[in-house]
Length: 345
Image (cartoon, rainbow, N blue to C red; front, side, top):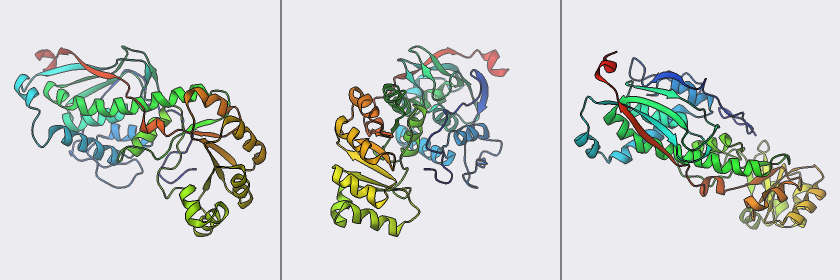
């Protein structure tokens, strides 16, 4: 399913330009900037290069900027970074590396850059060493940043919180993708996301090789058990949704083969098999015989993922991708103070 101004379900991993390309980021000459990325004529304080990177990744730069500013405001608590102000000279500059502490898949590099842009303004230079979606090893450099030391240290935690979180989701997703490689099934996320971060977390799923379900309740219908109870049956629930929203894709959750046959008879586009065993799932695939797409949900683990995928289902629905993924450990290490002569250059 594709919706306006949103990337398609199956997305090639974005590339943000050649590795080690050095660019300046920050606000444009006016200090405001206008997004020219197709998301609308709205003001955006991020620089044009960064706006293009975010848009190319299928992210709304204005949404990203809002998330970033909220994270920074939360971290500063309406005050100042008292430790940094007390210990770092105002005119000091430094170079530092964002470095992976463990192996994984990276996601959120332009989001981390957005934090640097907001905190450091146009006085920051970023050298990119990898792109989102890349597999990295422990000790590998991701970004090298040169900026005012105070700004860099103030931006550090907000940038890392977002980068570690999104990279953790991408890494977890990639483990599932590799577990079912070659089966033809795809790993799909759910709406079990962190409030306010859904577009970023679903982007991270794509970076890990997974695909997105719906972004919101309006994108598609998913008739679940509570809807079935409220409507008085699977067939009636499906018919009511189809009548009210004839152009919206409708997925129906079923618990039994009897409900599966009802949904199939009504013309469901996609049927979710809830808590079926692998053997029961194989039986459902045989019943459907290609007349609808099938998605497995519940009871799924990395250990059982391949058994489910090999039954012939189209999707594995994994809420844990976003609600339980551990972070990928990434840190910022100041490499050196920038000499005065180089500051002036």
